[in-house]
Image: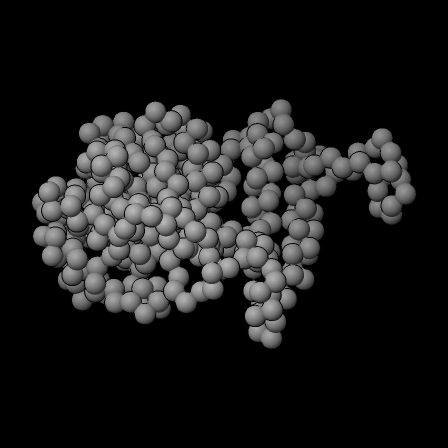
Length: 342
């Protein structure tokens, strides 16, 4: 896998040492600033330091045990999410600034697959599909399944890398995610790669019933993921539209493959796909969050029972059968479920 960086040379400036700079102007009255009409180069590092220092004070308040209840009651979660991780927040701000200045990143995920990325999406893809061995193996297996005949339901699509990879190989995809920030990023990614005709983006959660569902946002700390969280006050949660896979089938047609990564809500997603899975045999690519399910008081075995009841068997990415009790041992495990393994 190779990584290629690309930047619009006509946008932004550079110091003599080659550092990217932002031009700032002063009025000559503040110490450290030039007189009006002169340019003051500020490096990316300077901006990151200033952003972090501005956030750190609030972060300490938000993380103090004594004041946690007070902070939760007075500061909206959307703001607190930005304060939880100053470095992540600074990265997000800088990556957004770079993108609007014309910067993109290109990453080679296979010899015949190059994806152009927003700088923040590039970080996410690099961390997951390149640097994480388990996720890299999962993605490589997914690529082996892609063809022009694929119709993918990408459930929990996040920034859309699976849908985009499939689309670049001629497939069609419905990319579904409840996170507003993830959906905005996904739309940028789809446009950057010219996949608008092959991917339909739907902002919604997928569950076991249609209607609405309350979700907890992780913010920039975890790249905008939403998840189901029990026992949280209503003010902590964001209400999202909810759809079942069976409803998606009614609207869009029968998928050949379904990728499910929904932060511990996998069993509910499959319960909402019973009509489809009893009548058809799509390949299921599942990310099972065993530790997260247990942490919310659930039983991760419920998902395996649902799969078995539907007549599916579970395999690893190499096509080897997986022993159910072994699946439950790991905090997160990625598997394939199918009636006829490919």
